[in-house]
Length: 297
Image 1 (cartoon, helix red, strand yellow):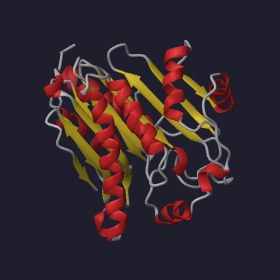
Image 2 (cartoon, rainbow, N blue to C red):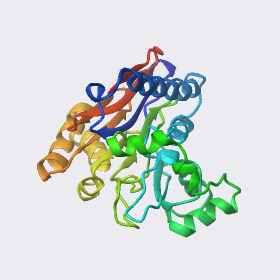
Image 3 (spheres, rainbow, N blue to C red):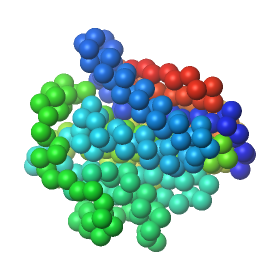
Image 4 (cartoon, helix red, strand yellow):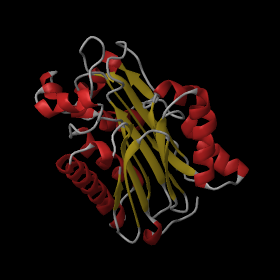
């Protein structure tokens, strides 16, 4: 593992790829999205800049996005065809290769934190449904009711406008450790019980400190079939190509050429950051060791 040093720390976050972009947002809403992404980015970056770990930064970033109705994760999760919220999340440490994931969670406020606890306090990688919720309850995690997800009018407006997406974060810390995480409420009006790529290690999330970390967003079935997140890390490590090349080639061959849509956020072991998508827009932000934040739609 290559030690990065604080000057090479890097953080990339995303709020989903889809129909949302500056051209369809009012000036007020564009400012709100930009402010929220900037807030998340800087709070997570503060962890890295003080010598904190990449996995702490990734969890912190996603927790903040799970608390905001702008995104399809946590509080902003969209309902399935039965009108129920089922949340999925995963997180991976690229140095230890420990990973945790949850799917079909209904009552835990922060699925990304539950996923991390699966990796750290159980011998398993994934827990689903009632079992995942029960595990969170047993640890005293903060719980919510169904009313938590639907009480704000702007929640429904964002759902109707299609302006909501999966969230994710990828970080490289000063010790050279890479971590990645992804959290989602799933696609709108999906079949109850459907699970996409977000909680699937290797599909929606992957991290290897010898290569890169990846968080994906889009139509999950394509990312699962193409094992997209792992494919990017493998191509970079074994073919010796750049992060940008690996991301572009994988998105094209594994998603676009098969009729899928979506986006990818990735950070490699040298602090390079790449975003790629084939949708009208992708909510994204990144920052490096110089501390200058960049936010884009």
